[in-house]
Length: 68
Length: 549
Image (cartoon, rainbow over all chains, first blue to last red; front, side):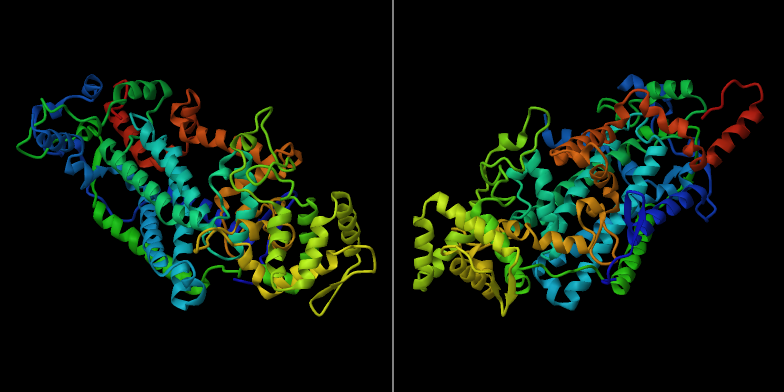
């Protein structure tokens, strides 16, 4: 790794091979993250299943605006 | 009024534990696009841990000790992982429009962390005490000097940069990360975009205060507080989520990756240049540089603020020069600091040097200039022999004796110490020796390593290692007009980047433009199951006008 770096020229663009690999990896990882899903099967439920502690919690989202 | 009770209840209201450590999240977070934040956090943890070890053993330890070098390699690869994952986190949050529904401050804090992280990395490069640190210091000084910051933030002052790197900036980053995490947990995770822009705008109005907790008058105190996220997430499918488990997995992943890369690839460390090495290996260049300092024709002698009253490197934006405004705060008198003062010390024990120095200083300015011009011209035909510079015969006055002695001081290593002289016992300001080396020695070596500004050097690293690829836009401007032809290129680039950075930080506040992610459509891929479910529900509901998204 301490040997002279390899550089690539594209017109006025000059980039080291190592930096190009990092940028390519970022794009690949991003695309994979968008394309893939976590493998485990999730137990899905709706928010209505979450215990309610107060009657106030059952308010519709509009209540948030009223409070603000 | 009991202040303790008031504060405790306010904290309980704003940050209930079920929000801080959630065990259920909406099912749309199944995408790995939600994983980059925790990976960034894990990388930061390793950065801090390896940084603490490096700081504990001092800045020279890693150059001489194999264990130290390995810890430095961990630090280096953790930094790469930090920026890698933080950039991906920024991309994904952008495409999700994560600032919606009352989360603009969350985006702002995250973007500021990115900027503060770059600042921390920059001071880290400057604290390496190797060639890379030397080159970045002399190369970067022009940029900060051009907007006046260099007058107070001296990149060639190792002590100052080290303090910033190991304490001040990490403290800022950690504080910002804490604030960012708190905002994420208080506000919850933003819901997917609605089907239409109009519907999304209606939601923005509806939920702009989402996440704000109930007032004390309505909040129960005898049992766990309900979260506003319950209201915000209502109607969404939820899935079990283990925050601690996910954090541990991310920590383990970064740990394995950093150890593997540090063990296999190590980290870059090109030794620093010294005045001694410069004088020994290239005596003609050394003397030529010294002559430009003595005659006042060097870049540094004519530089201007913060070093002197010259104007050779003064930059401005229109009529405004922040560099001039900041004034001379790091005085450098090139002729005295680099030639006359060191020779005055040598003259105390060498009568021949004392006589030569006396002859030179007592001569008129015109005579001095004539000697300097003749000797400088003769240096074009100079040769080096046994560590001495041989020039053709000519009328140079006392200059050959003076330069011979300066070369001796340089070759012996004495000049390295003399240029560090300050009023105190401890020395950590390398401004003067670095400025001397910046004339020829440093740029010559930097060009061999593709580190010049014209070589996109800001994002490059010595050897075959990846560098600061995330600075591509910063270094890009130096390659195109009008930046690469302007005498105020640094100031123009900094202003441009300042504006672009402000746009990034305050992007959520930019009307119309902040809807860009919706039109780009990447969110449809990230949340495709969610939209599939919504469409299915819509079909089941039949004539129902709008799905409950």
